[in-house]
Image (cartoon, rainbow, N blue to C red; front, side, top):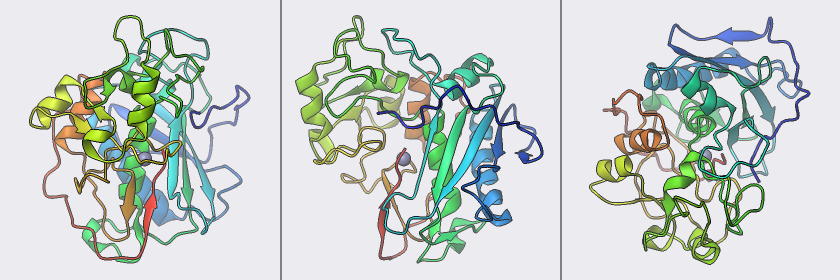
Length: 317
Ligand SMILES: [Zn+2]
């Protein structure tokens, strides 16, 4: 199941509630008018989201696009999901290959907005947990989650950092032969070098389903794009593959069970100052999935150790 498959009925006018960001060549435009938000998206929370958008606008500054994101809220302290994000589907029809990029990725790569005035993607935050909106990660309370870090993580999913391989090893249409995969999936494999067939797009279902729940490190899935492996010392980059499949999380994150990597795209985060920057390995993954013009500027000095804390929560897509 892919998250956030919207109907075509989203025609909410993008008007007074729009908040635009700076003058980057790509621009994230956030709409806070959803009724679930109420007063939850306070100005400091909006500012943290805008700062995370600025991180991506810098990375994608060689592209031109205006990405309209619907901003939503929930308030569920009992849920271990902190936040989620996704892109709307681009082409609902089945097309074999690795080009099933969603609206956001397609717009960044082509400059063309496939769904016009409709939202390109969505971000949803669970305010049932404690959040900190500090400008610098070292200022984040040890008992609260770093909102800017998590929002950057979520926006990276929205631009295509995610796998769509299902728990049963099918594509989103249920296919195992001639699948319709997204660009990330082209480079997902296991420790035997098993990939989705690069020419007929068939998946070795049993090989993938065992690796999808293989556990940490070599036993699970890994990302094997050429740029990512080069950035990772010639090694495949382990993907999150817990022994109990987690819909919306397995395969779409770096493997924090094997780590600690201290990568922003790990599946879970702790309270306290989070990672704000995008590593060279993660930039290389973005390059492998098609963003060949991404700015090659690994973050430095942004890695702050997690503080001791009580919670370890998942960030779904
Ligand atoms: Zn995530």
